[in-house]
Length: 105
Image (cartoon, rainbow, N blue to C red):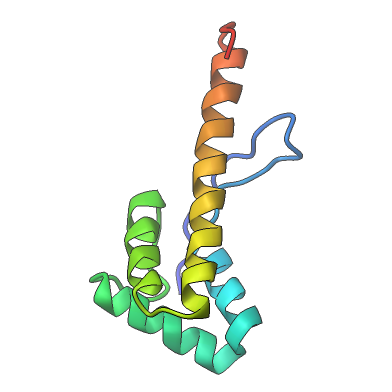
């Protein structure tokens, strides 16, 4: 399995990083256990036209999470939590960049 390069951390937010496929898989494994978590992720990837282990970047991750949500039950909560982390990272990163460029945020 190839790991995508780690996104840069956000200064001032304890190096908060964008969620990755590994984060989504870990969350599923905490909820369902290793085997069932992997099965749910593989299904989500398949339905999103992606290969498990090769979901790199926010757009493919968002597609996989949308497919994960369609599985219902606890998968919806797992997908939603990762989506919230993605949006939070994006907003914090934008604000941090604006402030580092001398903007008001």
